[in-house]
Length: 64
Image (tube, rainbow, N blue to C red; front, side):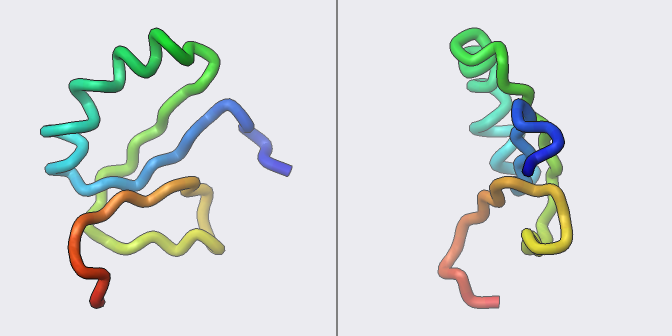
């Protein structure tokens, strides 16, 4: 059971957040005011099992 079901926790690269995501968030919030977005800018891979991150967005071939 998610304690905060209306909060979407996103882990994203800082460059992606700045150049692509942030300019579009206001339109998303207008369409979905019930959903709160929490951004965590990070270059590190996300460990979903041990945190509250719902989605991680990265770019690349996937090799670590």
